[in-house]
Length: 91
Image 1 (cartoon, helix red, strand yellow):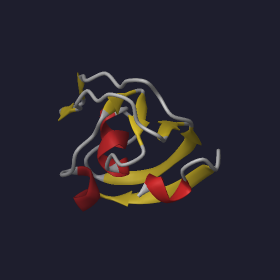
Image 2 (cartoon, one colour):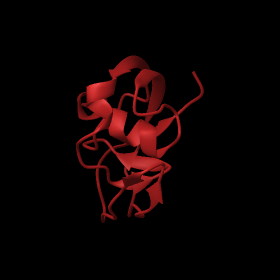
Image 3 (spheres, one colour):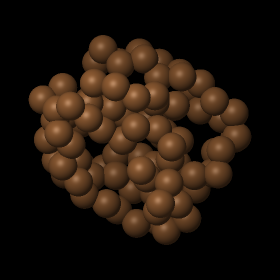
Image 4 (cartoon, one colour):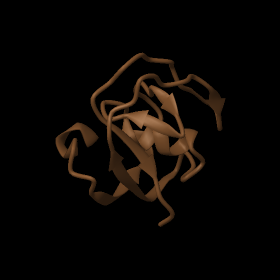
């Protein structure tokens, strides 16, 4: 989980298996809570498809709120203040 890197500002690369793209909760759109399922959020963000693939994300600070949206077959949820977030960066 991205939560392990909270506050680091690091950019992390990882490989998402197809099975990791199909389940799990995502909070936010563009900027995601650090407890969101990373690979599922990557599908939402259009970084990979349901087959998986390599992604990169950067840890960013807290946000006051996160907006919900539907994208690429994934519905994300809204959330209030949260201590850590991540955004995707081009691989």
